[in-house]
Amino acid sequence: MSDIAINKPVAMAGPRGKRPRPLFSPRNIMIYGTLFVAAAYYLLPLYVMVVTSLKGMPEIRLGNIFSPPMEITFEPWVKAWATACTGLNCDGLSRGFWNSVRITIPSVVVSIAIASVNGYALANWRFKGSELFFSILVVGAFIPYQVMIYPIVIVLREMGIYGTLTGLIIVHTIFGMPILTLLFRNYFASLPEELFKAARIDGAGFWAIYFQIMLPMALPIFVVAMILQVTGIWNDFLFGVVFTRPEYYPMTVQLNNIVNSVQGVKEYNVNMAATILTGAVPLIVYFVSGRLFVRGIAAGAVKG
Amino acid sequence: MTGQAKAGRPNQLLRNLNAKIASIPMILTAVVIFFGGTLWTVLYSFTNSKLLPRLKFVGFDQYERLWAAPRWVISIENLAIYGFFSLIFSLVIGFVLAALMDQKIRFENTFRTIFLYPFALSFIVTGLVWQWILNPEFGVQSVVRSLGWTSFVFDPLYTPSIVIYGILIAALWQGTGLVMCLMLAGLRGIDEDIWKASRVDGIPTWKTYLLIIIPMMRPVFITTLVIIASGIVKVYDLVVAQTSGGPGIASEVPAKYVYDYMFQAQNLGQGFAASTMMLVTVAIIIVPWAYLEFGGGRKRV
Image (cartoon, rainbow over all chains, first blue to last red; front, side, top):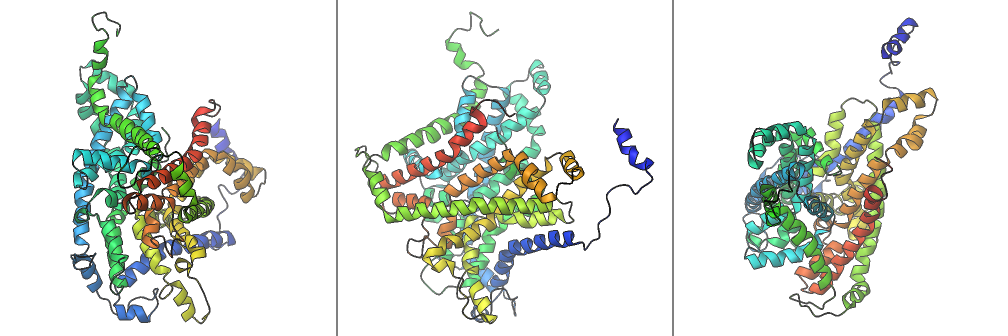
């Protein structure tokens, strides 16, 4: 039937397909014009950041923020990394960077490990009450963090890990759990059930099925989860401030302290260099991962 | 199978044991932190806890004090203004961009990459960049002035009455890319035949969008709305980075009020009361949505 529909225009000896549009039709000018203006707006801050960080302070005071640097200097970058001051210590952002690394890597590993096993259990090994707990978890994702922060402080204090990296890692695991569990549960539930049943008949148990069948099949979703968590945890500010001591402050907190410190002369070029350095990790993840990043954030919109 | 007499009641707990062990972290998080923690905070918001939480109930005192505090009232006003414009603008901008992207354009991936990259950046980075661009001495204002318009004034971050709009600009820059992506996914989900039918009927494109496509995308709009709205209530880092709540208290937001009272002013009761109010705000948004989506019958599938 559809063949007839497709072949019909051929019979009418006229031109087929859409009328080719001229490149500079008013319609195209409007579409591309709007998109280019919008793109310029989105790119502007990145451009300003880079340009400012490559200028010397005298040039910043004289010129305007949009002009490209007359002489390029990398000094602000060095200073931002190694000697910028926050309060008493002056060892730059590098400390914050390494703290963020030490926070992000274990948090990502632990949260994904727990959530993937959990999502697998919820999808394939339901037990009485499992859906109830899961519902609480998902609803909990909408509760403002501020409501739960203080009880967590108390729990961590009782455990003797308040202010340590371990404590912060646990916090990231807790707040990453709703979205990650949802992600993994939905993914495992979408796999054909026969796969699971066949493995069961062959005598495989909970862990054997997880490690030998589910895990290898779920690699793409693991990558999505990793992107989600790396950017999310790296960009976190609130938990970093609340749950760690100053010597463990992650990069975002330290960046804010450097830029918004009241004492001393403001060095805008150093500030912008520090800002780029902090944004670099998620940006690299974003540009490298491309479509998977979109999939990761869209997962937030997927309903359970 | 399960009703074997041998496997009596006590063994019920041991069935499917591995799955239960695997779910322990989730159960603890859901019950202890999410449920218990929330209850705990609400309960203690009725006490006069200062430096340490104490169970000495004072009724609604903390709430009366909260709503009498100018800083809280300003925070709520700011949240309302910020929330309203943020919702409107992100939906409109996001949808228009998505509609333009959906015209089978060239360089679609490039445009998408450009629109979405701010979303990968933290609010701290966003706030600091826009603090610099909006800096009256060096930023947009000074650039326009140097072009000859010497009386040009664009100084949102240092003008109490409009500071919240300065924050809004930064927030929109960061968040509209996500909305665009969600909308684009929604547009792509619409059947090509709808477009053909409307073209055959000679309906203009804008009218097709307004009267056919947007109503069809209702679920996408609602999901997006919920995502944006729950993000709005949480806004904190952006304000801290961009203005630290200033000038004065002009750009304070509820989340910052909570943090400051809990961890700096050591007035826990106020912090708990304020965070409970935040919870109420979220509930006002979420409950009707959840009801429509999951509760009120299964009319739509």
